[in-house]
Image (tube, rainbow, N blue to C red):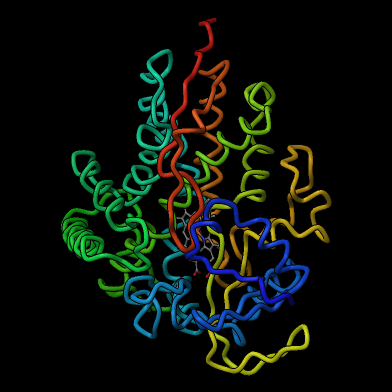
Length: 396
Ligand code: HEM
């Protein structure tokens, strides 16, 4: 490995374009060590996929992000079973899965469609607008609120709080005090929601989680609240970024005519592969392990570079090409093994509905790239702001 090869998920140059450094890591240092930040990183598809499946050697008990306040044995208090190993992970995930069923997600379809239309229709033929502020940053959180049974009047405030939780000023590497406050307010809100659903159950996920039972075991209130909070952390910003990334990359590669004419599935999958919103996931190495001639001691922090694995030439020939015709079945954007994203179906359904409506209403669009703003986060990649202008389809 040459001495000039440096990778940090906090580096602004990496946020601008991480793919050149990923390519070098895969080639020159497939098991990379960053002394200063005290982590190791795997970047090849085969290694990342194997590590995802091996929870015994690559543990989640200290959480899955390097950010100081989110790392440690307490991580599960805010990230629920995302930050637990079996058997505690298995117990919580199976209880939650009793309520968070594929059927419940499918049944959201008409409401997601309605919400999409309400947001999108007024934007057609109007002035240029910010696709993130006015659409992609609104829909996912409102869909999560719909799923949980949050009354419509409360949703704008929850959206605001969720935004504060994930917002980072330039140069800040950890959750700022405002983010902590907003997280506490959200948790307080979910505690009240739970109490309200217990008094008067509805046909929503929160009520279903109160009823969920496996062999006589049930979820404690604190466990339900932590899971509701996890959905905001895991399912909100990631889906926002996917929608804006899809618009951006199709435009950047001069494929807008094509994506606006075709079914949107290939557009979604190739965007997930080419530039995934969740760029890397951390693990704790449970026992010494050796790979590529180096040994990582037990207790080390290890990053699985998902964004890099998705660009591995050994699995995706011509991986740096944004290609709507490619086989994307090996994409690893939703992880793998025990922690495979619980919301993958929901994210895909939402993107399907949102982008299909977009293609139905829009005949052409332009991105104002000079004024687009990227987020600076250690693990989420995408736009904080994406100005676009649209031409609507003529009716009929
Ligand atoms: C494009 C959108 C999304 C991406 C890229 C994404 C990515 C991921 C990844 C990589 C993991 C695995 C984490 C690990 O192995 O430690 C994960 C887990 C998870 N995701 Fe997603 N996700 C998305 C959307 C959603 C949505 C919409 C929801 C729910 C509303 C959701 C809920 C979860 C949950 C609960 C877990 C934890 C699963 C476990 O630990 O067993 N995600 N997600």
